[in-house]
Image: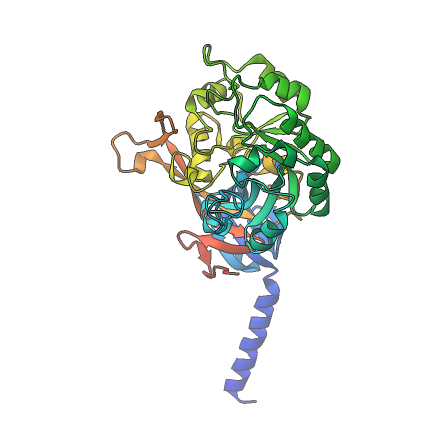
Length: 424
């Protein structure tokens, strides 16, 4: 064997040895890991292999990773879960959120905001769910789960959503039980009227399918009393969304006259009722959220209610909503918990929303922007609600990198080496 051949052979053997030494697909180095399930808030490294978290520890050798993410100065969290989203997009122009133009294709907005899982909040009902599964759930890289609407047609428009006769608990439960991998609960939305029947049929479907129910009161005059909703109709684990809304057609949780959270709301929380933000277009007001947060009443889960209207208005995206709660006084670990582990628990998907060894390799790397380095006189960020109320915050969250199912799917500033972004 000549010298050239010998060197080539040695290089080949060395490459085989190096490849065998790379036992992880991705190593995330030097970030502050916030993992609320495991009470972790410390500088740690995270190693992934395929779709699984393999190790969270200090000083993992970067040579053991085929790709290395430089997360120094950044925050590493479980992939964000948006528990109230609208994703049954389509071209039936008269069907609003059910195979219609008001819903959004998930992959177009999720990864760039650190979201790896969305839960569609009732766009499809038992009749329309097969189409939603085929064209959205099965076709998206984002993990898409669903609350099934108690209305058989789903969110097809006001005429359909007021049809109590189409609120079939048995059929809704049947489809939910037939699709346990995709359907995590039942949704009531947009019903207008002083009538408990829609709520009770949604809860009945939840009981039959053994899943939680998410309630979005459309509205009524007089308003339906939410104390009765919490204490007489809902079960522990059921979800009250739009919890910081203040509209004349819905009863708010904060007494407008006193600025205090109503006493029965605390009792509802003790019972096990979950309070979800569900920000939306007109379903969040600082006049409700600020006094609640200041008094220590934090939402169980932070979510967007994202659709074509809310995303371009005060809501914008998941990170903007999370940043608003930072500005109102929630600490970062609490905000992360309400956007990861808490929603995973609420929808009974405990394999998500955490970085435990063996959990799903969905990871978000966040940068906390500091207002004093931004180009404005105050050194703060401005956040507003649909009423025009504006508050200032010193910090704002930005997604640097998103990993979904063990693959880098979004990298804002190229912090991955080698820089390979998965497109499928």
